Length: 368
Length: 186
Image 1: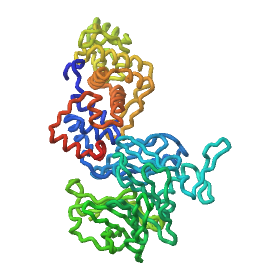
Image 2 (image 1 turned 90 degrees about the horizontal axis):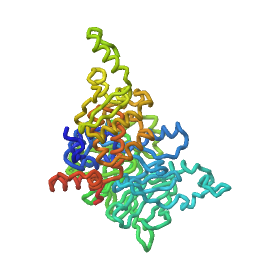
Image 3 (image 1 turned 180 degrees about the horizontal axis):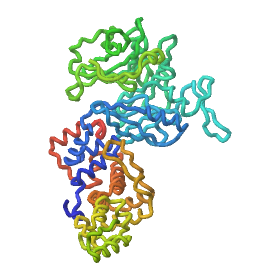
């Protein structure tokens, strides 16, 4: 050991100490730590910090259990993040107090969270920047109920009283961002909400949610995505809508693919924007003869309907299907991902949920 | 402490006297002497515990050549503050494993203790804690250091700790691209 008091250099700390520090770091600073200098980097790599980029799996199941045990609590919460290449290691990410009840979207490094007032916020776990979106009371179906002292007590949603915190846990299903808010550019947030029936959006700088569409009948929205300047939404029955959002006309809808009758229960539908310009629609359904009895079908959405995607088109890509975000990633850029694989985090659509729960417990993993 | 009956009487008396003392004297690299509670030193530092048990404690000041006086003063201060504190079993934190180790949050006074330190003093203290095998103090100092990294980009961490960026231009570009999504928002 060198003389301790003379010219200390933090990069030369003993490895044991560096590991001890690393051990205390949550995910964002652990990644930062890993790129500070060569010694710190090699320590982090040896400790298994995944320095390559790649999707992170976020879970708050423990949190839900804890919340149930403790009743309502208002404190900073920590979620676990798992890297797909090393799923045994959980990294913590702590959210500021009151801003995390659930997560319903992940775009461009930002998370779309439901806060304790059942409002949506955009949160960047790396820069810790936070943007509040317009409140839930914007929607005509939700009214605030105030107590005698003017304090917010409940929400009234279509005739039913709800706890302030609990409404948000089922009110929002999915959110997607058109671009990263950190560039200071104009972004649009589109959400599927209210039992998958409603499609709404808000633009940066605007103070009001605008409802784009309310589905009537038995169909519902399953997923939405942003693809080359437009939003797209797919329904449980496979209808694909294209949405243009501009200043003059608000939102303009165009049906690109019409609904189809599908035999057997569909587990989930996803829309994925690809780097080569295609919009993909993937659906998972139960079929005997496939692993876990789940069959995936990948289609290309084009102006004249859906076509089966030839395998050669995604030969060097991996697909990620998740509740909050789905993506098609080039394996060249993410060398540790397996090409032509589907990474599935076992999401399901509401109507099939009960049915599935009786059939299976826990899915997930890689599928070719 | 058990007395070795095979040794001479004088030796025995000396050992008993030493065992009766409830402090030990430690000497820093620059020759300064510090008194520390023997019980706390043995409880908090595996190295000092070994020295006390092995009888290699010098009444005139046990030489700790690797530790400067400022850091040793902090070590001693920490031990003495701990002297009448919680038993060690509650403080044991298990080995390295990511965020799963049951790390007991620093107590209020421990937090204050490390908060008042300059960066250099903190650096010296963490090295001293590591050298003396003081697991709890290492936990507390590392906790403080990890807090200093919260919400910071690699560039900002380098600035805080005055760490030289020793990557080649190519390596740096590679890392920037790797982490662009998180810290640089391309």
